[in-house]
Image (cartoon, rainbow, N blue to C red; front, top):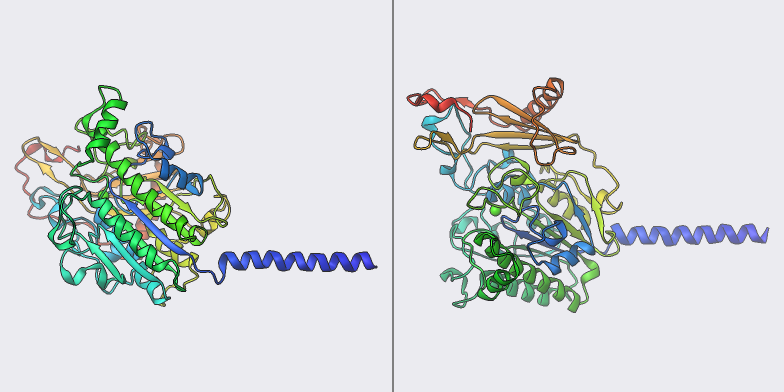
Length: 479
Ligand SMILES: [Ca+2]
């Protein structure tokens, strides 16, 4: 009898301990959140994602202490729409952020269909991830590339950040200076932003309230400016026939890695590593090298700006000691729209009523060693952008694409030419084998999902262009 009583008591105590552990995971201790976003860093741009060119010891260690996703996607294959989705938690048809600049839609005179207009900014009425966390008591800051509105009224200070430093307009640079940022001459810009981030952590680490720090670096976006010592280092280390651009990217990636290392060391120094969720990703795939290949995207097809995997599949790393198992891998397809609900879930913040979030919290994946699946049929991309038809070369550089990824399959709709492509990404990650002719039922199925999604979200349908200039005979030839 006594034994049974003891064992009941023990079981009861164990349950208490267990539930306490769960409470600690999902309960009162709100984590700090450090969101690091690289720019134009391809899927194969890190050691932990397989690159044998770069040196990324700090990011590799982040990966070793956390979880990496193999099937993580940016919300778009270019900067601004990708960032709009991260900040708003919404698909493009809700934000109307489709392109970086309106003229990027290409020359309308050659198009079969007209595209919806771009919002040019992230509208102020959107409740950003920073606003949602700030409302819950988080201290918020961002230092780096904003790209969601270029005038004063669209400054991140008006989108939920207590502190923010961004570039002037849409200028891109890695060396040099910017008169609006009080930046010492000769400073490498990522180092400048990192110093601001370190200072913010220094000031906020001991606060009662947690912080949300967003670090969107310019690295490794053009212009390809790197520190001389790193250029020399990679020139000496890599084979003589290595393209110059790869050497520059390696040198720039080394700076990115160093910056990440400094932020992680600061968390250690302040004793807040265990209560900080660190997220690392990139806003889109790598740009092409001059010969139109990119080893930083290997083994994926093409590059930034394209809806093939090379434009959109990017690294995603999450670290939160005690919650996310070290060295774990998740194969669940995820998307830029998922970061917002993930951060809110981690922080136990309920999204504002009536504000629509299109993504899902990744916490089920993050807390199950990557085993749990998300309750979602498919991921979508709506990308009305077109570099246009070029009469000089008689070629299209790009056309409007919509995309669905459902389990192993991906379907790309080419609006301009009314064609589709279908790939089985599990068997064909390089998208070399178009299955659309052989699998008409699968095409039909995915197209019906895509159609339903577009309708549900109010995505603009293509408008036939009655003013199209048909004078060039080859205009209907696909790329
Ligand atoms: Ca980018």
